[in-house]
Length: 228
Image (cartoon, rainbow, N blue to C red):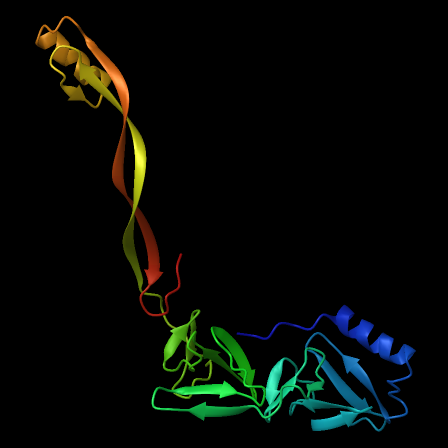
């Protein structure tokens, strides 16, 4: 359940645009943005780097304990955009609960449904009803009693085969004796009939529309719901 990596080209284009408009001046702020394959961080001229909430040229960012910029996540109730900046439109994020369970919402009234969401460093899954999943497997990932995804949790799939049926119509080739009207499923059976019964008028063929139950099998893990 790893968050999608930020496109380096996208972030570079954002920062280049800001520079062109004289908004971002890292050196004036006493530091500069840096990145590697893991993510982005802000390093001061003295060599140290930003940790926690940091205001850089008028925008707020959150840097985790290892110095990397957080993004696409709620931190302390504040939504961080894909570029890491705090989006003030979605603020006041908080947990709420009733007799059914827990959900997450903010001042806009929005709440997540049928999706994973990162909140304060942990990932949670919210069902179609909006309630947080817990003590179960979702998309092959285990969420514990607090609802947080546990990356170290694994299991051996218990594969079971399930069979479902769909009703379909088909055209079936039939054969009919011209003397007695007996019907057969194959040309050979009809021929044997007219020869043995001496029905010299022979037989004819036609197509009949029939309704059949078509089986469909699925192999599924009874624990997490994964299929193969």
